[in-house]
Image 1 (tube, rainbow, N blue to C red):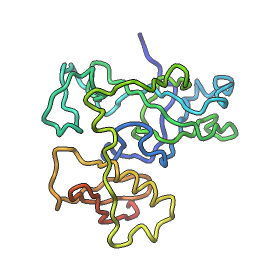
Image 2: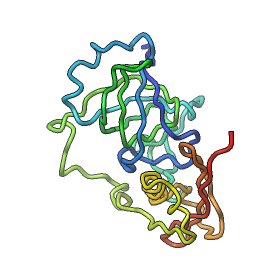
Image 3: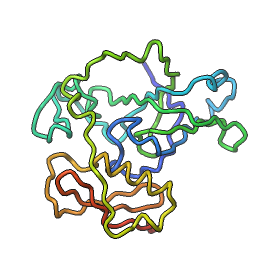
Length: 227
């Protein structure tokens, strides 16, 4: 079967480091689902305005490898415990496909690259190819008593965020909000525990540097990216 790329995401994430590990964890992040020219047809989105959320089916385009391994090391388990690849959402799988649930913020038709769908909560690298979108159906897709296996104890894990130098005070409030939300997700590899190590990543127009001490993310720097 040949899969066709129907769209690509336009997101603020230019690198893998810093991307939320699951969709919906940082709802402050806005992205666009921009369709390829062959699928840029308003009729294809007819009725979508009645739904609140979408499923995106996409490719881990930065994780395409030859062959596969039956076990992987989930980062949240510290990188030293192996689990079956089909019991994880690791990008390193026989077919590098991702599945994300995002909220529809608006559908824009009157734009040069429209119609496109603006969404929030996406966890995709900028430019990621999307193979399909499907509406989220609460009656079928929401299972309140579902269990999450070994991931359940990790589902509420977040860091508190500290800004000792008041860096965020000079930024627009909405930017400070999503920066804090990203840091609370703890972008570090779980096996790195050095409290003096400074980590950095880029998101949107900013370069963000931080370190982690115990359960606190301490903001070190926020600067505009250089071109």
